Length: 633
Image (cartoon, rainbow, N blue to C red):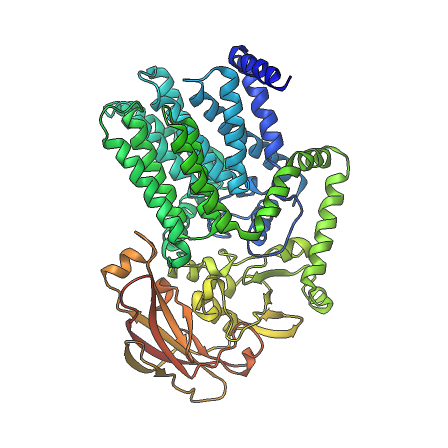
């Protein structure tokens, strides 16, 4: 009976026409999207990522002007990829966007498969592939949108002679999608634009009108999406310029030096790229060379992201791309699929570790959570109840002292270094420093933007106090160095109101610091230990600016080509990651008593500079410029 049933199923799959009609494709894609989209929880959490997710929602709810008032790696439509319920209207829009992205990925894969499989087989493989890709990257929708663009572009490249009208419509549509995605996440838009232009060139480099139409669609979509997001058109150039600073600063500022733990990922990445290139130069292959070249290019871009900021989440995006390529590539042997699939699985398990159980459980329960989300969105009052319960849980976790909450009241507040979700859970009036998570102020331009806002901005700054002294930021950074101008503004334009339960409250006052006065200058090399000059008065602060002697290796391999090196600063023998773009700006290394107990507290006796590298020399040299600054009451 079992064999007979299996044979009947295979016969039905091979003969049925289900999936050939557009409505059947759309319905199947919608069902797949419903089953997969609810992998992440819709309940607000606390932490670094939930904080910026809440900030994107707050920015939309409070109609902040992107550019002068807020800037991040996302844009004014960034709230669309939030899985969390922060505001009811946003949750509806986000749900629609997320379902559309998953449907687009499913339909793109199915269209590529349909060129060599019957309708039902195409749907089955597309369903499995979409589910695996979504499982791997845990519903990171901007990255799923990139995968969808890759799949749809591949449909054209896998055809021997695609219709010119089809090529034009597909490429221009991808250009428009790229403009929209730019406002969701700033790196996904350019990536999709490159995909569209690459396909257009591969299918006829002389079709300049089509290339221009893609760029025009990208520009028009960007402007239209900007206006639909409620932003003022004259601020678009400012946001684009500052977003460029964020993107360029991210390359060096957020890179993670590749160590031994990265060896399996690097090995798989290089093997994959080598295999694709080998296929490209092989003679007599059955796969279109333009598709192979396109796969190599997109793989290189995604691999650069995965290895640039080396963590599990970024690597999983690369693995998801590999899965999609394996699914849609024609004439690939079962043995090759098994070998590569096994390698992908083993790497995934090694990186996710004990968290695999939670990921599997979330995927299994996703259909149940999807129903729950839709009910919450549709039932009167259910969304408001869910949001209030999440806020109550967050208030319990944050436990901000009642006297601080009462003091802030309805006045404006900025929360540092990263917990913007405090504003949402306590219903504070938010007036953030534009780069609202200070670790993202990677460049002097962004740091100065934060300083200017702080000098004449929020009435209060609520600071979550680091457990370590001096305060340590993301990736082991020195808190006072990652945003030196911001730290000085907080010290000089605000007064400490109190410290309690790991929270410090500052109130804006008149400026009470003097100018910087140079104390000394020292050339430090080869991990020299330099004594920090003592302040000449009890109310004075000491600062240091570091002029790094960066060579070509540093410029290329801090993140631009590959993250193999990073500068460090040693405070009293303890090494910290140095944000090299901000190193020349004098930062606090010795503060008066008024900073005690806060993230500004630092009493350095010695300082040195060095390198953290994957290979080669660990020494570094720099000129240290010491300054003193009077700090009044």
